[in-house]
Image (cartoon, rainbow, N blue to C red):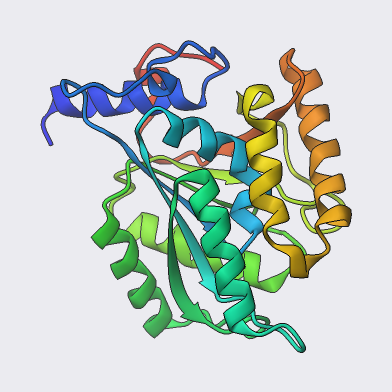
Length: 248
């Protein structure tokens, strides 16, 4: 990728995450502009939907590609893999996203050399323009595991794409989420996000969506809109926002 191509992609990604709702990333993709690919990592089916569902809906609505990368299939005790996979399939259909699985086991995440390599290969094959993943110290070990795997893949792939952290079920799971660097106004797609979350009927959506909706409304107040999703940018890679002359 030459300098001109890099600046074009960085400007697009910066616009995607910046406050202005009229940014290029949220405008309809044209043949002259390369469609961007975004990966949203989650420990289990439902995590990307709850944390980033509004952002995903906005991206896919204008023609960009989004992959929901789940660490495992979510099977747990009385809830089978078949049930969780079906729920995730419905959620992805609503969000117009594509599900991908890292094929680990719910509650038994493994982070070692072999799994670092396997996860890197997934990311390398997808060639993302940006990646979102869990906050580093979420309470659930599967969340921390996929973020650990993702961070190592990001380093091994020479930090060639921007990496962002998201929050989910604050207090219940995400703790000590720092001051956000970017917000996305999801007011217009809140119903789409809710519908995708409620496909996960086996996972007490009344309770968990209630928590997440409270978080989104609070982030909206911070951002001057009704509802928003907040992100923290990982430093150390390309300075996408500063380099493109864009701020929060």
